Every structure is written in C-alpha cells, then in structure tokens.
Image 1 (spheres, rainbow over the protein chains, first blue to last red):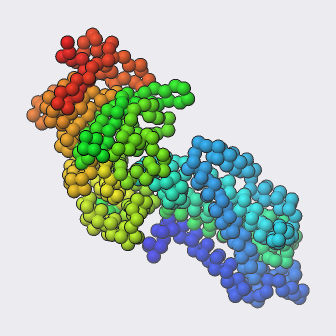
Image 2 (tube, helix red, strand yellow):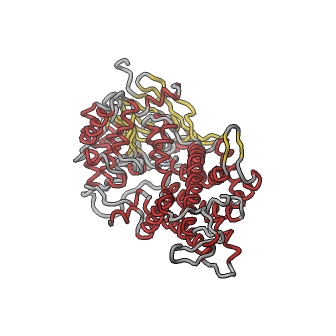
Amino acid sequence: MRRIVNSCGGAAGFIGACLVFGLVLVALGAPWIAPYDPLHVSIENQLQEPGGAFLFGTDQSGRDVLSRVIWGTRASIEVSAFAVLIGLVFGVSLGLVAGFYRGGWLEQLTMRFLDAIAAIPILIWAIALVGIFGVGDTKLGGITLGNEAKLMILLGLLYIPTLARVTYTTALSESQANYVLARRLQGTSGVRIMFSDVLPNCLSPVIVQGTLLLAIGIIIEASVSFVGLGVQPPTPSWGNMLADARNYLLSGEWWLSVFPGAAISVTVIGFNLLGDGLRDRLDPRHATASLTT
Amino acid sequence: MTSSEPLLRIDGLHIAFGARDRWRDVVRGVDLRVEAGEVVGLVGESGSGKSLTALSIMRLLPPGARVSSGRLIFDGVDLLALREPAMNTLRGRDIAMIFQDPLTALNPAIPVGRQIFDSIRTHQPLSRKAAQARVEELLDLVGIAHPKERARAYAHELSGGMRQRVMTALAVSSHPKLLIADEPTTALDVTVQAQVMDMLDRIRRELGIAVLFISHNLDLIAQICDRVSVMYAGRVVESGAVEAVFDEPEHPYTRQLLRCIPRLDGGTGKMPTIPGLPPRFGTVLTGCAFAPRCESAQERCAGKEPPIRRAFGHVSVCWEGMA
C-alpha cells in the first residue's frame, strides 16, 4: 500500500490516481453501469427530483441524469485522451528535434511557428476553428470526420505547441549534458543519442504536462459543447447537459446543473492531483535507497 | 604501423577559439607522443589547454573552437583528414575517454548496465546474451561487487568511486588502444581516488591499453605514468620520462610547480605558490609565456621565443642556461 501511494507521489497524487482510475472505469463500463438508456425520453418522468428510481433525477425530457453523466464521462475522456495523444506524438517529436539540433534554421522555424500558435489561448482557438469548420460531419478526402473526431484532432493540434515547448526546453539542456558528449565519445550516432539518451530524460515533464492537459481538455470539451459546437445533442456530454440546465437555474431544478458540473470538477481535480503527484515522483534523482559501498 | 611510429602522435597542434575572422590560439603548438601500451601524463593548470588537446584527439571540440593547424596521427591514420562516419567508428572503439565527473557523464534515466550494453552493441557484433554477459564481466573487471545487481542501478544510486568504475568499464568495453583519462579522480576523495587509480592501472596492464592521463595532480602522475608532458599557456614546456622530469626538472615552471606540493616533512609556514596568474585568453604572447611569473626570468625571456632543448628524450623549452 505504502509503495502504491509513493509511486503516485504521495497522498494527494494517490487520490488523484484513484479518481482518474474510477473515471476511466466509468467511461469504459458506461453501457453496463448506466441504469437507464441516456437517450430514452419519457414525458411522464420529466424533471423528477433526485432519489427513488432516479438517483440524480431526470431532465426536461425525462431522461435519467445519472445515466447521462455516466455516458458523458465517456465523451469527455475520449476527446481529451485522444487529443493529448495526438499532441504528444507530434509535440514531443518536434520539440526533441528542435532542442537536439539547436542553433539551426530548423529550431528557429519550428519554435517560432509554435510560439505564434501559442500566443492565442487554446479555448479561443478551439471555438474559432470549430466555428470555421462548422458543426457536423466534415468530409476530408475519403474520410468522414464526426464532430467529436474533429474536436479531438483540433485540440490535439492545439496541444502541440505546449508539449513541444516543454520537450524543447528539457531537450535543449539535456543535449548539452556531459552524458551526451560521453555518448559521442563512445561513437554513437546523433539520431541514436537523441532517441535513446535524450528522449528518456525529457519524458518526466512531458508526462506531467500531458496529465495536466487532460484536465484542460475536459474543460475545453465541456466549454465547446456548452456553446453548442462540441458533442451534439442528443448524445450526452457534460458540456451540453450544462447548456440545457441553464434554463432551469432559477426555477429550482438544481440537479440538472450540479451533477454534470460536479463531474467536471471531480475529473479536473483528479487529473490535476495526479499531475502534481507525478511531478514530485518522476524526477529520477528523487528515487529511493542508494546502492553505495 | 612501423615500430618507430607511435600509437598517437601530435605535431604542432594549434587550437583556436573565436568566430568568423577573429580567432585566437589557446593551444599553441603542442607536440605529444604516446606509444602503444604506455602511460603518458599531461600536467598543467586549469586553462592550460590539456582538456582541449584531449578533445581535439576525439575531434569533439566545443562549439567555437577549432584546430587551426597541426597534425594528429593515430595508429597511422590522420585523424584530421578522416571523414565523420569513419571518425565515429573510431571513437569509443579505438580511442575511449573518461572524465572528471562521472555522474554527469552517465545518463541519469538509463540503468548503468544498459549503457554499457548499448556501447558494446554499437561497436561489436555480439548477441544480446553475449553482450549482457560481457557487461557483467566488465563490471567485475573494474572491481564492482555483485555486478548482476549493480548493472540494474541508476547512476545516482552509485557512489562517486563506483560511477568512475562504471565509466571505466564503459570506456574499455570494446578494447580501445588508447584511453584518455581527463582528471578521472579529481571529483573523488583521497581514499577512493587511490582505489580508482589502482583499478585503472591494473586494467590498462591487463588489457594493454595506452593511457593519456590528464591531471593537475603531480603525485598521481608520478605514480602511474611512464612519461609526462608539462603544459603552460597552451604549450608543452617540458616533457620526458617521469623520473627525469620530476627528479631533475629543467624548466623553471616545473620546478616551481613541484615545490607547491604539500609535504608531511615540509615544516610549517606558508605554502609555496607560484605568484601571478597565467596569461588571460586573448593576450598576445611574445617570448616565453611564463616569463612574468618565472623566478629565473632574464631579459631575453620576454622578447624572444625560448629555444627547444633536447637531451635523451628530455625536452624543455627555456632560455635558462643557454649561451
């Protein structure tokens, strides 16, 4: 137990890890966990208070809020996770190359371009771009991209500058470390040093940043869905549930906004705690017992 | 290779720092020979150009530095004329190097055994299994107990002495002909220093490796080296067999340097030092660079290049005693 807690970077990190683990389970198990069909409309059950048959109550169409929150988890985590994955693949490669081959035009070109993108906040980009490409399916060559897929790719592209810069700064200092010179002295080629020596040393801040970006992705997905550009109704997402709940804020149906809102908060807190815990944990120099003679 | 040709020969090596059209020599004509299996010491103060000379042999000078003239012949090959891929194969395979600070020279994110493993696989066509066995063999050779377990350790989990042993294992992993040791024990405390020196000496005997040993510690040089070259301000001022140079130093700099070694029987009082500082980078040097600090400087020292005196392989560059 102690070891598990330590490997998450202390108690806070452990709580974060548990929350994230739970959310992933909920997202994966949505079809089995959700008590009702999240799309099932029943007028006779509309706006039921929490309790009884409907633990989180029902919405204006009589749909079960609990089931919708559970299915919403899936939409949020899916978008956020794939976005971070895309960002990681491209961002880390760009940052690594720019940092390792420092002092060339490649570095300048990459980093200045990324700076330009990063100058505008991600949320603004996301809303602007979704607005430009429009809601609904977009045909790209032979591939049809659904709204969620578009959101993932967009978010992923927008994550590239952040992740590239984190990798770049670390790669920059790591490539000047003595062990890189030592590897050159051993006759190892540049590309090999970059991937097998510099990259592993750049990963810790990248993992931490990636975890924090997962939290940001949740918020952005919710925000974009809230303004109606993200996950489209009737598919449930925390953002569009909140958008629907807006009409009932003052009339007393508090459960419509509280439960999806709480889901967002818990998820973001979970990822943030985990990210902070990993930050403490992932520095290899913080490690455990020394083997000294 | 003919018998008269040494393993490494450096002729008139000049290394300059600068940019575009402004270059200033920091290494100003170093001549050095290392025979196969021999240990040659290179002594000098910080900034005298010892490490630059060593890095130039590897052709890995820091950015902003370049070899401006001279020749580097290793094993009959002109290193300066070699293409980069060929040079890369030579690095680590034929010439290896260990540094002052083994912690920063080892990758913090990769277990030390894995690093040795990678280096072996770069240069030798061994199977994974054979390479793994070789890693343990090497760790055992450099005197690390429980090599199997230690191979899985990270650099920060090892003590300074163990790290330097690991570095040595890494360096000799592919049987180099020449090992450049750049102040390998400076970061270690004295007892560990002695152990590491013993280990180095044993290994180079066992494997028949020539060593270029760079240090500012005269005692260590005296212990391990066959011949020694003393550097001052980018130039070799005296060189010869260790006994000859240390017992009958001819250059005033060597004499003054030897006097600075603290001795148990030396009595109390102020430690002898060499007054003044070495010339700053960029100073235009005329005559002997050591003249301003030399106890036996004469008028002509500052004006004219000192002549090279040779006697039975003992070389010194000084006006002293010249007619």
